[in-house]
Image 1 (cartoon, rainbow, N blue to C red):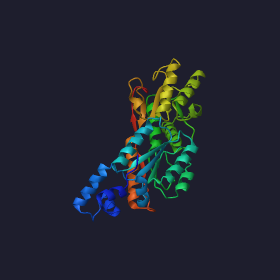
Image 2: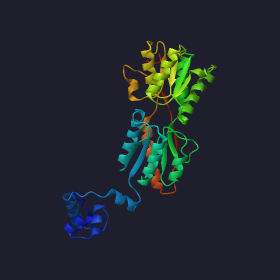
Image 3: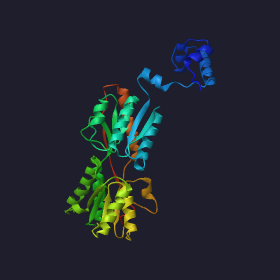
Image 4: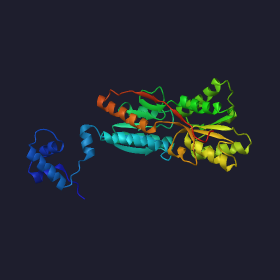
Amino acid sequence: MIDVTIKDIAKKANVSYATVSRALNNKKGVRGETGRKIREIAGELNYRPNAIARGLVKKQTHSFGLIIPDITNPFFPEVARGIEDGAREAGYSIFLCNTNWEKNREIHYINLLAEKRVDGIIIAPISNKVEFLEKTLNSKIPVVYVSNAPHDTQNSYVVIDNIRGGFLATRHLIELGYNSIGFIGASNDSLTIDERLKGYKLAFKKYGMEVDESNIKLGDFKRETGYNLIKRMIEMSNYPRAVFAENDLLALGVIQGVKESGLSVPGDVAVVGFDDIPFASFPEVQLTTICQPKYEMGKKAVEIILETIEEGSGKWVCRKIILEPELIIRKSSH
């Protein structure tokens, strides 16, 4: 299939290339009848603008890059949906990149998106060590962090109050009468783990209770980690009677491990997660969890990118948005 160009349209309409360009871009200087004729011919020839060439001229590609660590975690598609909806409403498209929690992939995608000259990058970084990203882009492309962000960055971010969320989850279990409460999380270098664990410990401190460090187990964010860690603790007959899992996938793994060990939830082990992914409300799960406004997080990230683009190069908007968590109580904890 041969691509139709404005030269083909100009030849058939018997006008100049410039006249075709003005007509198709709704600019002044083209008579109404001539403009209608040009647009009709463009439709007949099935003309499609060359977005790459147009982007090079305008120094805009009308596209954003979205880098997330785990497309299989239902939390991130919800964030991505908010980003995609916000971008589409503004006439932008999205390049979606999944790093699978691999730093090399993250670096590769940062370089790739920079080469594609995207107008902005929204990223849920694997860790707080984002020096490569910030050095590579060097203020050439606006960046917004979502879900996880180093607080000392000069870039914008939209995150949840993780300390508050960890506190709410643990306080809920303490107020139900549990004093043996475990924490299962990931061991990567992110503020997510640090802050949710800090919230967990703050709740113990508020109620004058001691934290049993042997009840804190770390692995990665996968469901299998929650399953394996709680199974191991149960097999050693040294398991907590309640667990706060750093995310819902870990919590689902904990529930599976508890039940496969012949124990019940919440009868033997109460479980609280974090994120409120769709699976959390399923009748057979009914997971108590901390709700994050995932869709809103994505939409706000796009709003910041668009605001930055409107400001112009070198005048990046810097917004630090911390959203409030909400405790959703279901049957897994009481």
